[in-house]
Length: 367
Ligand SMILES: Cc1cc2nc3c(=O)[nH]c(=O)nc-3n(C[C@H](O)[C@H](O)[C@H](O)COP(=O)(O)O)c2cc1C
Image 1: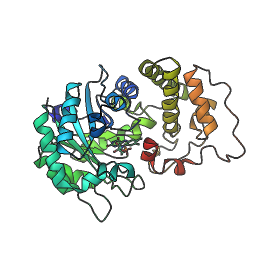
Image 2 (image 1 turned 120 degrees about the vertical axis):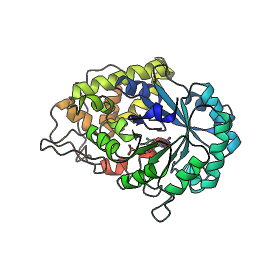
Image 3 (image 1 turned 180 degrees about the vertical axis):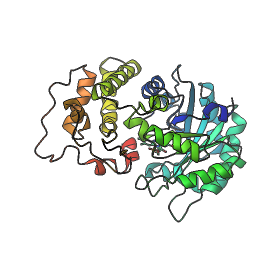
């Protein structure tokens, strides 16, 4: 199927190290997601036959469309890895040109590779000869504000045969400090002849509909929006869901069940599930509903919830470690959430440290 037919009109679950793990993608599918991308898999590690990297290629049977994202900067290695991913069921293969983490950029991967359009062209060419499924690239706007190269980079990838371009509308240097630049995303959509998928700051259904309608993109994509509120996919058909804390808990419990199914309900599996639950809880606590005055919270301004509507909602909004550990343990042990830890006097506002926590969210992913 063409990349256009695979993704047109959808909200894609973005590639996220740790975040777009298999049970989380299954949860998103149950909530309405149709196109999902794997965690980033490093081509070299696949070549070294590392089991943990192979696990990232695994597709859940119910995923309607599953893309695998690869990181690498050697054409032959990327071609080989793409063929491997295709043989394991990937519907398209994406090249990471945006990862900002020093560990990877120092090796010439991710955003560092995004500075080399000619090399990107050669990599895409090699991958295209190796697979029959679509090949895409995921780019940023550039390395930093005075080194924007998104049009050149997208053009080079398309020259090499790329079937689609994902655009995260920020530079490497900006990380998450500025809002995504959707004008630049629209420029790419207008400039290339393949489908463009715009990405940045989508959190509520009206954001998604507005960007789809006005950016010229074939589809749009969310990362943090899916982590903070996985029910965003359902909202695209039902409209804004004024979800209660109990309903949220139902979704978190479902993720717990899927995670136990995936990693196993034995000692080893539960240790792993616990790590993932604790990690996800760090995003779940950031959910803030629409204000009574109709104002929509934004992802850029860390808003606090104000007066919670129930004790459970208050607990789910806490960002202090003791609360996050408690939520994690109650989920893992099917607890009833009836005895939350007291707010420590050292934490003057248990919801007040959001900015520091989330300043560099991809660092969380690497950690
Ligand atoms: C926890 C986390 C992990 C991420 N890992 C990857 C990754 O492996 N590959 C990638 O291309 N982008 C990765 N990203 C970036 C997202 O795919 C996305 O481009 C970015 O977060 C902007 O979208 P948003 O504003 O919807 O969060 C990650 C983002 C987060 C929050």
